[in-house]
Length: 464
Image (cartoon, rainbow, N blue to C red; front, top):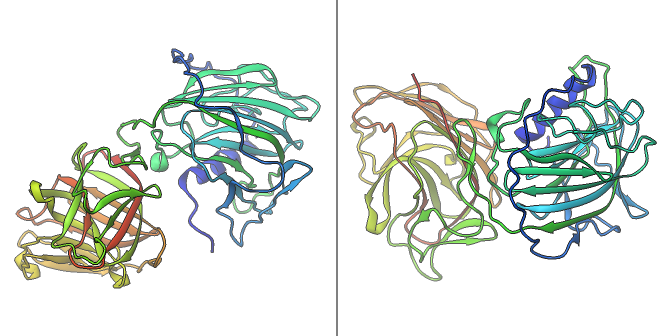
C-alpha cells in the first residue's frame, strides 16, 4: 500500500465527494474582507515554477498502486487526465512558500473537479462548471470551505483561464481573467469541512496541483473526473517569515525550519541542517551525558504533538510534560517517546528519563513504562498492570518516521507511522506529571545522530 494520506488531502476528498451529489449551495453572505495589509514590494522578479518541458521542481505525492499517476508534459502544458474511478495523484512543488504572488493559466474539462492548493491548507477550486456558470461555494475559483467567488469570472467557452493569487500572511486575494473574485480574505480560521488534525496556518508550504478523482460512498455510482491542464506557472516571493497562529484545537508549527529560534540547547551538538533540527556527536568524540534541546515558548499540559524524525545512529527521544533538572547542562527528566537506530522494536515505547518508580525497579538512569505493543495501567500504588496488547508499528530505518504523542489527563498514547504503539493510563499521583516542558534528546555516548522536522503542537481541552 502507499503512504498514509494526510488529513488535509482526506479533507479535500470529503468536501469534493459531498459536492458531487449535493446541489450547489446557495451563496452565503460572505464575511467582509479583513482590513487589507499593505503588501510590500516583492523580494525579486517572478520566476517560472514550471519550465514547460518536464517535471523539474515538482514531485508526485501520495501516488500508490491504488492511484494512477497521470501527470505529463505536452506542448508546454502540464496535463492531468484522470477519469472517474481511476484514482490519480497530486503534483507538488519541491519548494515551499510563505508570502507570494502566484500566476497560472488553466483549462479544465466540462464537469471535471480538482483544485490548486497553497501552504498545503488553502485551496482554490477548479471546476468545469462553465456551461451553467452558477455562482456558489462549489464554483470554479471558490476558496475551499470558505466562500464563493465574488463574481463568476471563468471562461464560459471552456478555454484557458488566467489566475493571479496573492498570499500574504493570513490574507488571500485572487484575480481570475482580469476580475477580482476574492479581495483580502482572512484565511486564518479553520475552514468548513476541514479537520483540525493537520491545520497549521503558521507555516510555509508547497504549491500543490491536485490530480485525484473521488466518489461518494463505496456503493455509489457518482464519480468525478480530474481532467485539467496548466501552463505559464510563475511565482514571485514577498517579504515576511511564517508566524505561528496559536489557537486551541489547532496545530501550531513550533520549529521554523531554518534556525533554533524558540529552542535552547548546547550549541556544540544542536544545529539546523536541510530544514531539520539536527543533533550529532562531535567527530571522533563522545557526548559525555544525555543532553536536550528545550522548547522555550511554553509548557505542555493536555496536547497532541506531531513530528517527523530520522535517527541513523544511537538513541534519542522526545521529552514531554518533563522537568528541567539542570538548566546549565540542559538536563531534562520525565516522560519520553523512545527512539533507537538499532533497537528498532523500541521506537514508540514510553520511557521515563530519570524514573524512580519502585514498581518498575527504580533506576536513576531511567525505566521503561510501556514497551511497544503494551496497553498499561500504572496503579496508584506504583504497580504496572498490562491490560492488553497492541499492534506493533513498522520503524523505517535510515529515513523519516512520523510520530504522534497525545496526552490528556492521565491518559497517554504514542503512534509511529500511523499505528498506536503504547496506551498508558498513569494513576500514580506521586510520580505522574500533568504538565511540563517539551524537549528533544541527544543521548550520551558515541556515535549519535538524530534529526527532527515538521514539529506541530495542538493544545487540547483539559480532561474532565
